[in-house]
Image (tube, rainbow, N blue to C red; front, side):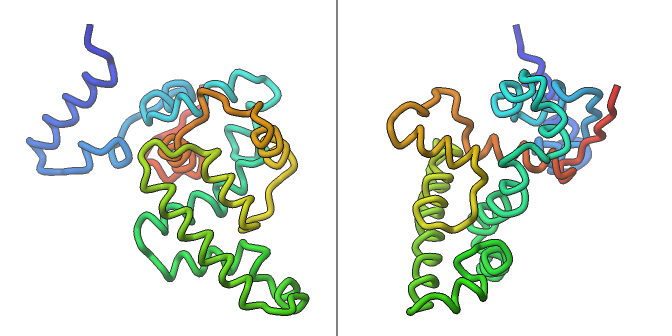
Length: 200
C-alpha cells in the first residue's frame, strides 16, 4: 500500500508540473494545512525528532512553543549557524557567533592573555561543523560534541549532562535525531515552514 506521504509527494509533483511552481516539490515550500501537531511532524518529516519528546507530558508545552530546555539554544544559535555554514554565508556566520558565542564576548576577550586564540577556536569550530554537516548521516549529538569541545556556545545543564553521559558511553541512543530532522523541527517551531498550525 502506498504511504500517505508518498501519495502527497506524487500529487505535489503533478501540481508543480501544471503550475510551473517548483515550491510544490519541496516539503519546506509546500502549502499544507496542518490541523494537529502529530500531523505536522509527519508531513514536514521531523516525527522521529518530535514524537519521543511529545510523548513526555511534562515536555509538551515547552516543545510546542520552543521553550523546552535546549531548544532555545538550538533555534537561536545552532540552527541559524548550521544553515549559514551550509549556505556559505560568511557574514551571517560572523554575525551569529559575535552575538551568541561567549568566546567573542568583550568580557571574555579582555580576560584572555591572547584574544587571538579565541578567534582561532571559533575558526576551528566552524570548520569542524562544516565537515560534520556535509555528512548526510550527521546527528544532533555530533553537532553538540563539536560545540562543547570548542566552547562555541553556552550549553544548558541538560545538554551538558547528555554530553557527560555520552563521554562514558551511555548516551549513544539509536534514535538520535539527524541534523536535517532537527532543522525541519526548528523551521516549524519558529513558524518558518509554510504551514497553518491550527490548534484543535
